[in-house]
Image (cartoon, rainbow, N blue to C red; front, side):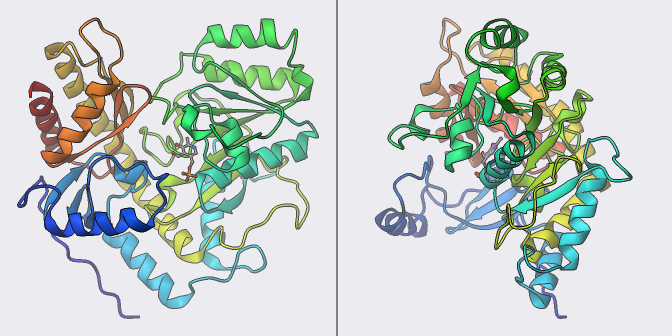
Length: 436
Ligand SMILES: Cc1ncc(COP(=O)(O)O)c(C=O)c1O
């Protein structure tokens, strides 16, 4: 098959050649705003035309350093040549057949790859069974269904600040921002939330809730992010996740770990939960799994994924092109990108901590690997969302793409191919923006 490998050759550092937004970007934004849903949350006026590695070029030829990876997605960088090649080849062979009703090789290979790497114990020679989806929300939706089906219980416990998606089940777990729920009516019944990440919260669960209004024997699952993402890149206290495991074991509850944002190598391990050596029952994935193609997955211990044929299915989930991209992504992650995430993440945190010493408006950095954030503070040390928004916005006009998270945090979730030089460039631009 003829394959046209991409030769974009963008510069490795930002290069702005027009005022922003440029003329073409202005035109496209005006057209977009006239016809797309007003629920989208665009911050700065970036209209992307091309991407390569950690760089993206807008429609007017301006080149930006991307510390967002399209919301923590393009793990192997924009348009990694091996991913593009795999996508082109697979597209030439088979675009769709539906893994629900038929078999095809890329889906088999990916399920084998994920099952072999799942941080679960071996059960009769197999670690996991895999159900493929198209998104994080769908993965969590399916995980709730599986947990209810297997345990024959219907309550679910989740965490304040957690984000799990926008469909009704996933939204019921989400405890992130009021705007995400307000106006949408009643949600899934039986979902409770407690604060994230602290032993005090688990004390409250065990001593207060379990003893009064939340009988643990009615809970199907505790759904928890290994590191809270949208909620602010919050790393839980030591022992928090292990204690959830222990609570689940004691009461026959399933531990579901949402690794949609923290998974696929971003934190310096394939799954963030592996930093704590905890083995959950179910893991949900999406985002980084296929380097930008829409794909998600539910990994479950084999003895739990026992739902009968027809009980859960999907037309598109596990699309062959997305699976082909994911198979290459997995090899690239293990061939060096997970290590790069760990090493570059250390450099990034060290650089951010220097900024924190220099500017009292910047908190110390937190996170693991390339899932790192700092809070922006006012002169009294309180969270300062306005300052955060100003910095994220201004950075764009200096060629640096950032995203916020939590109340007043800036998150750094670049593609895992980022170089030391690019980390330094990002830090320099950030320093300039904060100084201004
Ligand atoms: C931890 C986590 N879970 C689930 C989701 C939802 O994923 P999607 O937007 O693909 O539905 C997100 C998205 O940000 C996420 O960060």
